[in-house]
Length: 239
Image 1 (cartoon, rainbow, N blue to C red):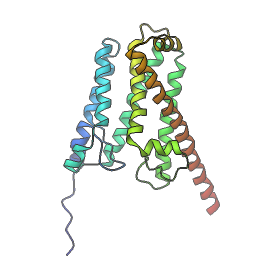
Image 2 (image 1 turned 135 degrees about the horizontal axis):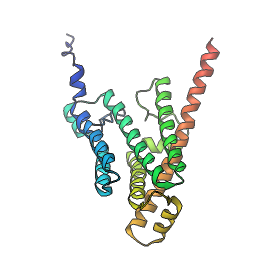
Image 3 (image 1 turned 135 degrees about the vertical axis):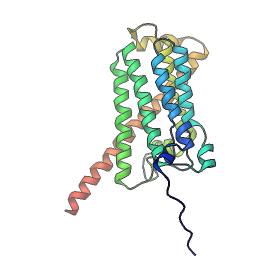
Image 4 (image 1 turned 30 degrees about the vertical axis):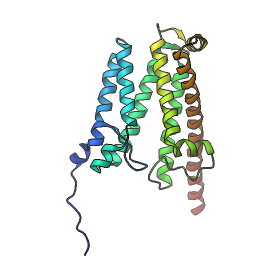
C-alpha cells in the first residue's frame, strides 16, 4: 500500500528552517544553507568597519565561520533546502564583494580589488548558469571536468575550505593593516612579508591559498563559458 504524502509545507515554514536561520552546511552537494544570522552579522560588521576594525574583523570572520559549520542542524532537523543553497551563495558573494569594495577605497591601485570582485561574480554566475543548462543539481558537481585542479577543489572539502578561508583571511589582514586611504598594496605586503612574525607567516600562507582560488575562478569561468557556447552550438545544430 502506497504511503500517503505528509501535509504540504507552507512557505513560511521553509523560510524558518533552522539551518536557514543559523547558517550551516547541508548534507548533500547542494545543501549549503546560509542563515539570516550571517546576514545580520555582516550588516553590523560593515556598519562598524571604519570605526572599529577589530570588532568588524571578528563579526565578519564569525559570519564566515558560520557558513563552514558542519551539517549537524540540517541532518538533525532534515531541513536541507534549495532556498538555503541559493541564500548561501548570494550571502557569500555579497559579503566578499562588500569587503573588496572597502579595500578598493583604502588601497592603491583600487582596481586590483574591483577586478577580483568582477572575477568572483562572473565565474560563479557562469558556473551556476552552466549547471542549470546541463541539468545538474549542484554547481559543485564537476566530475566530468578534465581539469584536475578544478575537480580537486570541488571534490575535496578541506582543500576548498583552505582556499576560501585563505581569501577571507588575507582580505581581513589587509584591511586591518591599512592606516590611511592612500596605502600602496605592494608596499604593505612587501613590508609585512619581510618581517619574521606570525603575521608574515599567516599572510604568506593566505596568499598561496588566495592565488589558487583565483586560478580556479579563471578555470571555472572558462569551463562554464564553454558549456554555454556548446549549448548554443547544439541548439543551432538541431534547428
